[in-house]
Image (tube, rainbow, N blue to C red; front, side, top):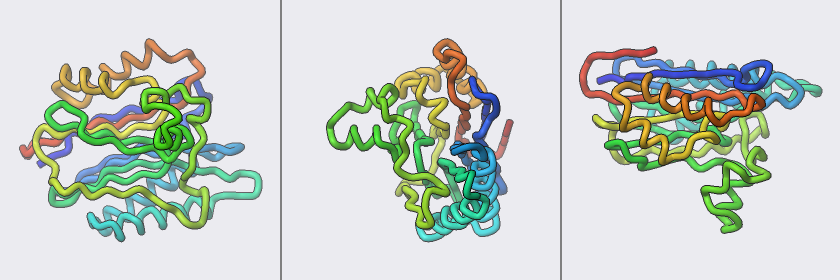
Length: 247
């Protein structure tokens, strides 16, 4: 079995890239992470790197698909970010991740970096942002299609390093990963330029994760204005075969 993976991370219209991404497979254990650093007077790249490094090491040392274990990964990473903050630099980070062990899955996130799960080419699940605009959807003030253009879209309700107590959203799907399952993990700088229906269209036209990302980035390139945020994405195809290609 293999998680065939491709990824992209770029600075967009910013002077530097404060996103961090990671993926790795060791036998039947797999991890993919996207973290979007929030500078707050600098340091966003430090926060996102701390989140990715801490979670990846914690999981690979003790790979468990259990809510308590996943929560512990977040607690350790949150403490790592808090330890790097100073009075003048309260850097923070969002994070979204996919974990797998023996084909069991865990999805988890804090903030507005997203995970999309597709089965048979159709979107079957996506994470819900911890943001003011997502709350506006929940309260009926706006519909979900208006999130990308909402005036408070960048106001987050949860972030790594935001508080001593961290409240991650953790889902353990009852079904194991299977052939024809695909995933996108991405920062808000990516998904704000691509609709979910377009993700499905480009997935159906793609025979590899690399091609899927290429198709999606082509759309993004036509929509950005040179002042856009950092953008990062990990695309994953699951295959029962033993062949593995990771880029």
